[in-house]
Image (tube, rainbow over all chains, first blue to last red):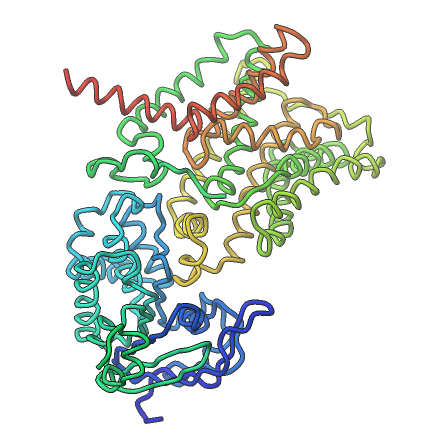
Length: 241
Length: 344
């Protein structure tokens, strides 16, 4: 582990009731890095993110910038600057786009800042400004994902957790989304952990990547290394090198 | 339980509601202020035109409306469910009754105390809501309602047992020149207006936003920093407070409380009334109050057995033709009228 490790996960076990899903995950993410978690269905990718944001019971340790996050409830984790874009986007359907965005800043005080942040979000996602007064449920899938990411940014997160942002979206839209995530990462130095089935896209933007299989990290490395790994290529990228 | 499903309707046009979010979307924003003003004028005018019995009926509509307003906070806005809200009404009603009976407390004092009592109880009984949801929560709240009647009968020395308690009604001050029924009506109207303002303010605040988030997506609400246990209990407590206030006004108006007035059927009628009136809408509690009060009393004229049957059938009909309740139906009619007018 280096001195600049921002997020460190040590021997993390998690599960639902009797079902154990994570069996001792070790992981570290550097400050300002984009880290991709790859792996097949059921490997525990979503559970790992849920464990990081306090939504499932865990054993082990999660530290963010030196502070212990282990076994804190989700709202306390959010207050420490962790924004989680959940699987399936978590849109508040009947609420307007603007109400959704404002809820993203729920734990923050200071009205002026929130207004400025709204502008910042419209900068990244201009389409949201056009849809401000519409019920969020009337947005397309891609727009809802943009809303979900925009809403997460309203927290001014230090760590952004993205769970399968490509789910159910057209390839073009997904590429656009990843490009914006990269921009956000560069401009705001937000650390990003992204869980993705679409390994190609994730490796394009990520600095480091980890492959999760049945609840354990089986491979870690830079995005290039992972991409070059023959075994990964066969298993997850869908081609032979 | 999910909230109002306006989204399945057409996506609202971009120009639609400028303020008020969900509330405005259900009722239509532009004409709400004038509509409320007209309604208030009519409400002040009505008791001078109607016979005392009708005034009494309208007073009861207001009592139900306040209770439904509370239930609406819980069910329509926070997405929880309660099949035991009659119990909170009973707490308010009996709280006021016992204060009047034992200590001769002035009527106006009973209102905040009864409401506060219900609030605290709601905070306690909101605990199951933290752990349970949907049907399980419905069952627990139903159990509270079932449990209540025998409890009230048991402590006869305080509650008057099955015989209930008879109490003095608030007397109209001489300077008003009002008859008793009119005075009671205006007291109920004042409480109703205050309750609506309070609920409206609450929903537009941070708390209201948190409740909507909890209703629409618990996971997303949680990761945004909304403390689910806290806000669920708070929703129960606020909701109970309104029901308690309604119960207190009930005691003022009827001048009599007995356990059987707060049987399980009251709780179920309240929930049915709210759903028929329109979950999560501004006008829903008022329309629901009208429904709960007048449908049984009008159908009584047809046949003694008719009220139950007609009440049930009407619920089915309303749910079938207007799944967003009468308030949603009114909003839809207003929108289509506007469209027709615009075409000409």
